[in-house]
Length: 132
Image (cartoon, rainbow, N blue to C red):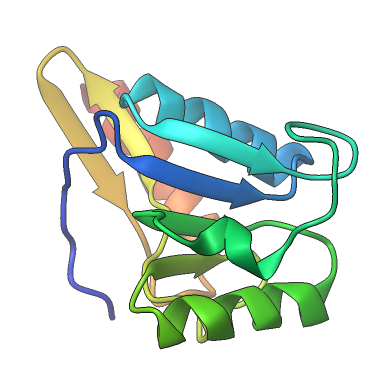
């Protein structure tokens, strides 16, 4: 299990590699919390391929491509540079999990599992949203 931590993302540089469904959804959430998000993807954002130097100076990195080898490479570089990284395709290779969020007014609840209980997290989040 990962330690749950809520952090201030306002104006923090965040890199999302991959602008598909997962990357796009996570980008919007990060922006809603004030993060300074850069998206690197040939079809979205900067419209070019990822470069190792894109990671430099980032607070968080999210590897959301459909290329497992590229995501592994990104995670390796981030770990070497002590930058938090989340791989959409590998909980074991992530240093943080992107939570399911339940928000209402001044309350924000984030839910994660040990990495492979996506249905349980989704169902629990729906119950919490109804309560809130």
